[in-house]
Length: 139
Length: 104
Image (cartoon, rainbow over all chains, first blue to last red; front, side, top):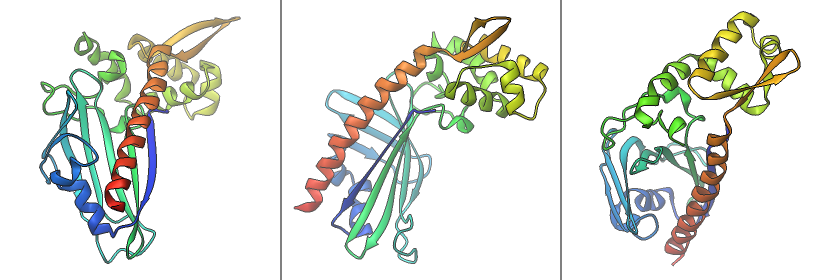
């Protein structure tokens, strides 16, 4: 199915520097949202205010860049789920791929069912215990 | 209410064979006979799974001669197209902002 967005951007920074822009609320407010709460643990709260819209969800995975991983391979991964009001929740995955010491590729993938059907049933905190499955019929 | 309709959708999608069928039909509408020839299960089993997917509102039936052709309910698909356009545009803007921030 096609509910999937993928974007890549090459950045003139080290993986550690890019990682900071993905995980430090002070940096996140410069590009992702106006206000950010991000608990940097699996299951932690993720809350973003973008204009007058609030998106809330939770952190699925958070793995900082590992210098031992070589160039061209994924090193540093943040995955979280977010949803606005009753809208279907979606999963955002941000992956860092080192190119050289001060160049890093950032890959963003945002997915909604049916791409991630195997995860049907995962509870989504902040939505009254709803899961994202109902999105299929609410759409 | 979405939550009332969630039950049948969950049970319909809980089964990996039904997910495969739904994915196959989303790519190309098909009859039960056609689907049975693509998958290692009997036509009878396919019909049963299609019935569960239809009951959950995920598939629609269309008469095709003596057979019935199944296709994915169009509403979620057209919704998917607008979702991709909107979400894709948002990421383009965010990444442009991130690029400007880190290039300073």
